[in-house]
Length: 143
Image (cartoon, rainbow, N blue to C red; front, side):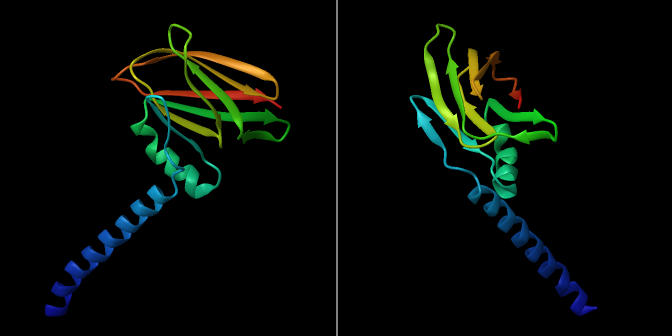
């Protein structure tokens, strides 16, 4: 009986250690945060660990953009997608090339136009960033 009462705290410590190790592993898999002016952003999602880490971080960014292509064999994630984000006055607030199928951006509240290009085809969307909403835009091109 004494042995069983000692096992419970030990199992609790081991479980917490495993969870902590998983949390640090997910954080380590995130691509580096970049800055352009006042905008913080990251992009990537190549491979399972990086994709999982980005999906876990999405809630911390007001804007998530996802890129995919569709063809005869189904949908595939895309990388190297040029992206430009413009404010309401047409000024560029972010110009980058997404390193993977996800781009997460911290934008101030406001209205923006997001333009992405794949295979010579531009897609533009209007997005409204507000404190009470998380915007997730999905761009899908025919391949």
